[in-house]
Length: 241
Ligand SMILES: N[C@@H](CCC(=O)N[C@@H](CS)C(=O)NCC(=O)O)C(=O)O
Image (tube, rainbow, N blue to C red):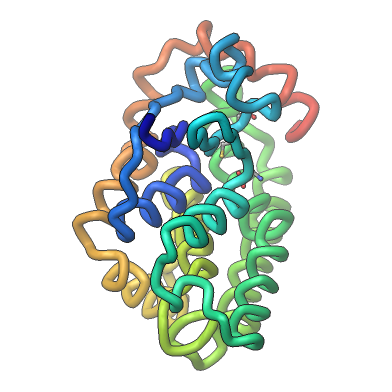
């Protein structure tokens, strides 16, 4: 049985796993799971991951959740080139530092902007109050500043001269608010130049293909039926309002 990856390219960690598998010619079956249709709550997916989030992996009788764990499993199983997760102690530590930091920083704040600007108005049928948007933007700006000043500094990539898992995980998160038409690159030449290097290292065609869903989100969300998205309401009220 082929290794299966359960993904929805709306999701940032799914995009990093997808890009990593594609770039490294890892054979896999793409199991599309639609988050906005609530397929993560279905009985079938419950057998793959009780966490009920994507990405998820099934390799024979072995199931794994959490994008970072999946990326590392794939890197180790398929012995991908060293630059992704270098054996060098300090380079690896730099990558681990970013991978540990990102969950509660750029990931949290980038996705929050996407929800506040796009999904919440759709599901609840009301715009989010400006003070909430402003506070979320402050948080996002703080994380972007740290990416530039702490993680990139004057290096081409987070761990040095080569792209690594840290840049891959970073770029997909940085792109999430862009899907809600927030140009996070404007006025940030260092971040923009880093984005261009990461995009070139991934390959423009793959990068653009993978980001099509999120960059088309404004249009696709407009066409969605809000009544079918009401299962998100309790979560929205608990997490964001
Ligand atoms: N820490 C997890 C986060 C996974 C995650 O939050 N996935 C989201 C999409 S980006 C999801 O599946 N959400 C479904 C839900 O909460 O209902 C990882 O890195 O894989």
